[in-house]
Length: 362
Image: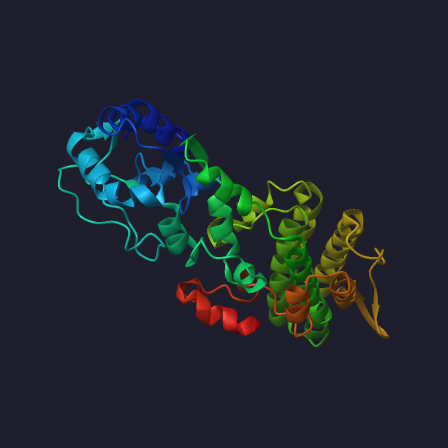
């Protein structure tokens, strides 16, 4: 097994030392972009030695302009004939595992012996694969809400090695973060989820159902973490890296121990106090954003019951009142269901046609 090299660095070297010279020689006049982005642990910088046990090796995307789309197959076939079998000790010819990946359908058999993973396409084709969306169309609020957060993050993460078409840089800037009012709607939806369940966790425990209480607490832990990502304007990664990504947030030093305490708690009282302390941190973070009127930062009782809550619905309503975009106002005027990533953790939901998901907001 060769020595581990982080995927972003491995692919950079592969491009600069091998792929770029071949492109300069064979297609000297062609403008293109080269990057490592899209699905993959290495794109997010979470890869390690264990990552090398399957589907591992140098890879990248080569993006050509729409008018040069006809060259894609010629470029891929040329590389399949001229690339070396290995690079830095890693096989260059390695089947791309696209099972369950948005990249399925983009890989085809190549004419040469090296079935490489330097995928050549237009950015429009990449958008269709990554988001199920035609990038030439204007983005509506419903589009943003039906894109999985991790898929958006995979567009702006990774590394760009070359871009003399300018389109890739523009794309990454376009998806750098949600439009302001869509962001407010997502924050409101996150607070709404907390408001709907924060009192249920201690109620279940009060009735002697510690398992049910712990289950609700876990849901609330995830909701708190999602809000932290949103407040720090970071796209949350998918489940495998959700906790790892969370630990990189600025607030993690204060919030992580509280959430871990809530997860480990043996009683509903311990669970409630840990979560209530986390809610108070969230409330302070919310007020620091100056996106709504200032709201209470101290947890209080739920009616006359001995349950500490932050009353998440108050934050949701305050945020909803700040939305001015008519399209987002219309959506927020209905139930605060949030985005696809907020109301579903099913991987298969992401495979549903984009237009069908948009209907939830129409």
